[in-house]
Length: 145
Image 1 (tube, helix red, strand yellow):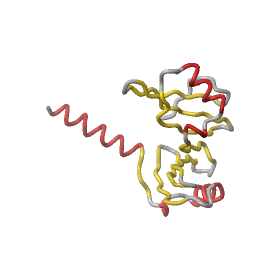
Image 2 (cartoon, rainbow, N blue to C red; image 1 turned 120 degrees about the vertical axis):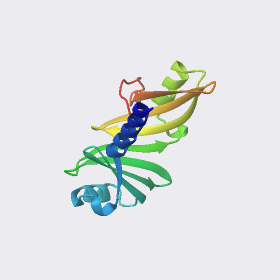
Image 3 (cartoon, one colour; image 1 turned 30 degrees about the vertical axis):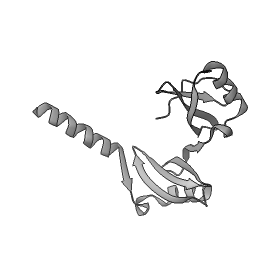
Image 4 (cartoon, rainbow, N blue to C red; image 1 turned 180 degrees about the vertical axis):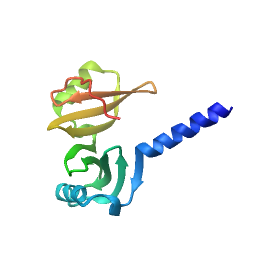
């Protein structure tokens, strides 16, 4: 019983250490400047510190977005929610061919190191599968959690 309590406490503590909500006043100016230049029309911005990166979640043009910026102000990764209709034709064709009996449930577009990836949640008989495609429509080993 004591070990279970200690394990649960450690897990809870580690989760709060990994991702910590922070007020915008705690975000370095170089990070905020990068964010404001890149997303001047962002709304409802919420900041977190995840490891060495600053993470901003926000709304832009009625879509959820998320960015990761390092302490030097370098934009590391961008994520935005997109609709199935916004998927590139190559990705839609790959899904239709490789996962014909699955339905597209949720789609996120990621940009990282000048590459674009699409994380697609596919559903079949109540089971979800997450598949990441590169811009050419090939299944990628890349993981986005």
